Amino acid sequence: MKTCVYMVRHGESPKTEGNERTRGLTLKGSSDAQIVAQLLKDEGIDTFISSPYKRTILTLEGLARSLGKEMIVLEELKEVVFIGDDKILPDKEVYPLVEKMFSDPDFSLPGGETFTNSQNRVVTILKNILSEYKGQKVAIGTHGAVMTMMMGYFDPQFDLDFLLNTSKPDIYKMEFDEGILTNTARLWKASLPEPKGQ
Image 1 (tube, rainbow, N blue to C red):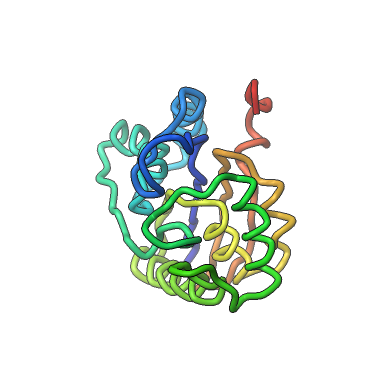
Image 2: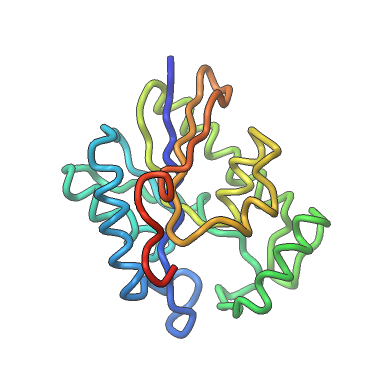
């Protein structure tokens, strides 16, 4: 019985407001969320699940609402905790940190998570989703690093280089048969021209 998971990475988000949990989408991010909805509206998605972070919810909720579906928010799908107190780190600090975490899975900053802990957390919840929603089409609102950890668990080609070449937003359709990944396709670039300003 085939189960489809749509990994939907959130749109562009400002790093100048709120904290990691509360920062929303930029104007471009909001506009791209409408494109996400257009791309996925005819996929027949049964269930919408999201990280608790505002930017992931905002990227998917328009589509969910238009289809009359509730958004299920799961704390375990949150992004890697890079540092304590939900503090926002600038990109110039995040990217070297992510590289360090991928090369040393047991490294973390004070108050932050290791790669190993993060991957265990998100893969456990993804396996639960595959079991609970078997045979369905499930969209997951997610983040770059934890999306890569989930995908990489099932196929090692989804590694740091893959992460560094993803976009905000991004969409990957994963097909599973009895918990085994059988196919992955990128829907974001494959279905439309590169958005202006990307």
